[in-house]
Amino acid sequence: MSAPGIGKNSHLALPDLASVTKLPKPIKALVYLVVLAVLTVAGITALMAAMVVIGQLTGTFDVFNFIG
Image 1 (tube, one colour):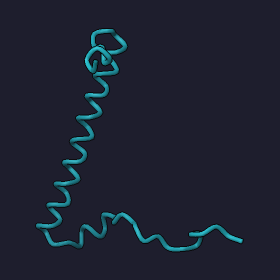
Image 2: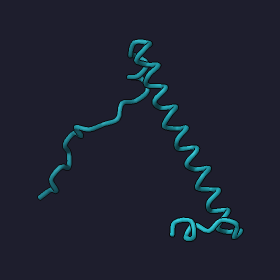
Image 3: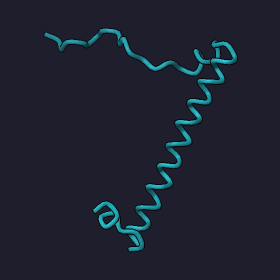
């Protein structure tokens, strides 16, 4: 007996960067802009989370007071 799905090819896969380089220039630029936007939002979110953690540790920012 084997578990279902073992040995089968995955139908959902993320494309690699080699396939992006084969796209036309305008579409490639849009792909890179979307990736840059996602990374920017992730970076800003990480900075905000770090500020909240530091604020909680130092006592200058109380998350529970802010929410409630």
